[in-house]
Length: 249
Image 1 (spheres, rainbow, N blue to C red):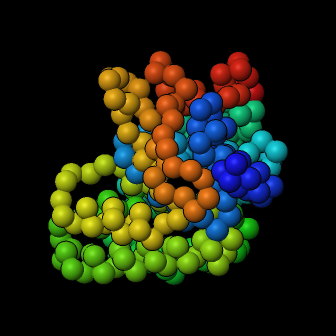
Image 2 (cartoon, rainbow, N blue to C red):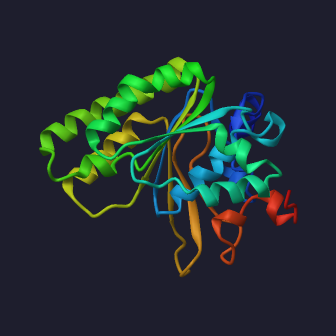
């Protein structure tokens, strides 16, 4: 009963939804003010591109009617993939791409400067409600950076992003695909998830070679749990309900 009341209360707010079978019943969507971390399999990256497109949809379709800032820390933005997703949603690829403001970082120093010095100005200037930090941890794993320095800077960044999301009433999503195991990486993962108010993991489904699970690990309102992606035979491009219904825009 309490969970149902919480979902009804949240549903009246502006949500950014995956609009995927199975997933929405567990996780109706991101709320303004969320600092979310999505980690695990590399599929967190195309999922973030899907959300960058969905953010431009009308509210009634699970969107925000918003531009997106995409801070690319791992050279992960895929123009063709994003254009295809736009077409699948009945949107103009050119218009969709024009509303995604990409800033690429090639070093940890550049990533830090973009976040601390440029993000607030860009969000205000372009009326952005959705920010993606793609592969947030990757650049801070550089062995040329002293471990203590990288830990201090990353902790500051994660704390800043949490406050930023709340103060600007935006959704900030950090994707953290798997990297090699190290104490530093374990620390970054713990800090990112600890500073976030929403944590999502994408893992392989047990007993399946290709199936994947969506795991809600942390949320201030929704009950935690897991849900299977709609089909083991579809790519993440095809999980959207509009595509499954045969709509091609």
